[in-house]
Image 1: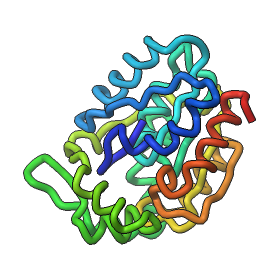
Image 2: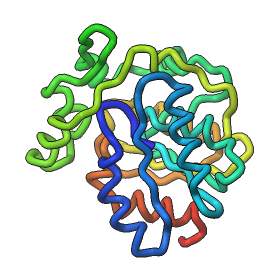
Image 3: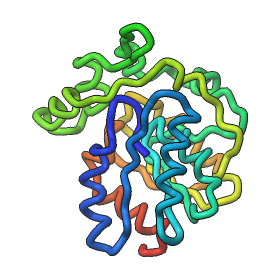
Length: 218
């Protein structure tokens, strides 16, 4: 599951490591409309998966993983610099107990549609991605709807299933200290990467290795 300011193609580099290992990989196209609709998109894919499935979420995608992870096929959860709420938790309120990350100031709205400015995208979202690649990602960023941010999960799959977490130590989109707290709270197997928020692009090998470990291929 991808998060805000992205689409399913942001997982391409990670997928290129996983498929040769024999994993059946699907990158969900998150509609970024409402939380229930995003969860439903994940569940439709989970229904099609054959066998135990590791559900992986980057950034806001962690919200969807936390809820959709209750699906019977999900064997483990992997969070990549991701939100990891508890059931019925006001995640925005939790995040405000930590210093506000710089990227927050770069969110702009056209009516109900939100996106990142070019400056914030390149500096605060994709800070360690080569400039040409970051420019391409900016040009293809997928806007989100305000209604999405109002969603609250009703179940927390990490309370009953194995969890893994990759912290981005140089993250300017989700506070790294918040990420560390979330990983500790769920007692996740945790790695830390010297990465921006887009570790799935700047450190795809390390992210893939964590996913493979969750899938029993470590």
